[in-house]
Image (cartoon, rainbow, N blue to C red; front, side, top):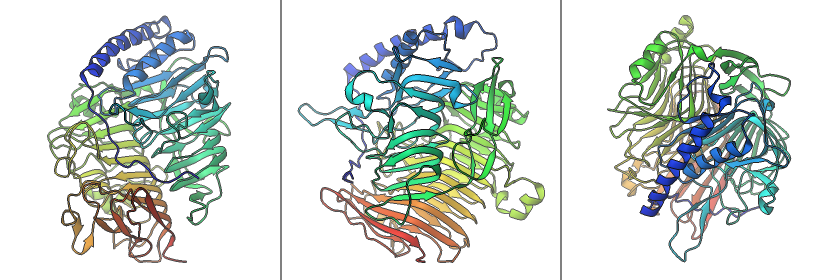
Length: 634
């Protein structure tokens, strides 16, 4: 068992002039390398190839491994320290085999980079080698200790391929395939053989802490969780799992460790099946070379991967049914295409929109590549849907603009609250839920950003499958109590909403507010705001602070599993939060396996929920925890 002290203050450093010059040279080299890859005969002569923008690089198994290696390495070198940068990349691999035992393809994944296979099943793309994330080494002053951590390894993804691990003859690095990530770095539809999967990097400066993460629909070997503070694994299989720090949740995972009430000796929460799930839509190329987007079906009470008995159940949509957008496209053209019945594919880049992208028809798909990022301008909403069923929104990041937005993503309208009306008009369907997959929000950090709410769910029958709402606690600009203002990360007004993988951090009031009936959350991770200047600025009435997770007093039925809330008030270490969680005291409201943590002697959480459990009190040089197995007590 590793110690539970972490470095809670995530930070980056402004680049020095020498580093800026180096980045400029690297950008030129990267442009030349990518141009060579894109211009290769395998990718340029086929008239069926779609134009997915300059930052989508498509690899073909006929390409020389050295050429692929040079391209992926150049992109990693540009993105490895670009935490607040503008680069966005999608690295896509057509069906086939890449690398050999003698000449493996091994590379790392940096910020804002999506790596994905283009097969219908994970086994259609085979990588002999490794695809990894290591600790990031931040600059330090001369003579200072190294600062190599995984706590800020955000915003990247790996999906829809198989990896046969082949080492590079480099000792420690040959011991596992490393995926040392924190929030917003999902692994989906991955099959790994040949080595353990390690969710921490114990080779760079020792086993530093990571603060992720999310895995779904994957078949994995033995997993070394190690210093991962929290993790959700959903609908997968594992050969085994070791270590826990604070909160490890498994839902529908074959081979998962046995769960139980949280204690010092067991912080696993295990659900045999996921009550409702829909896997993320993905691009693929069929046997005829045609490009499609596959949309998996929603399934009830499932476990294991969706492809363990064959292809995933669902339907294919030809790519020609999508409007393929590029940064700089006027939002009116995107909306005209959606109004005409097209789906929407956002190619990698940043979309500055003065009006919201608006989904108007049932079952429309909005899919982002390479963490395509929407920045709403002039105080607008970034994306909104009307009251229609079965919408799929996936792979998109929302970055708040300088003028306050009421929300960054709104699912449904206020009419969604009128349950009877929606049922009569068939605007909501439990068999065809709207699904949000890998949808992320940022307020500040890269620039000044403001948004009252990040995600607002008004519709009924919605699955929120992995989201991270983050009011920035660090960055290169736009960080401060009166600068990157944001009240609530996730506001749920709809009924029958399920969240699998709910991350919300640092908001100035409640991080999550749940007003809808029959809601369910499987895994919740929260940090309360670091930067409240004093207690008066962060309290309401006689209640100190705001809970991380608030269920409305009017709600009759709600259930949640594996909830963690942490405090680190570094501006004023004397601050208190009365409760980490607040829920109505009703028999239909049940919480399972809760943990609160006070980090490094900065702040106190008095109680876990409703005056019960706790406290977690700041302690010099370490962290203190408190657990609660069930609320209300059985």
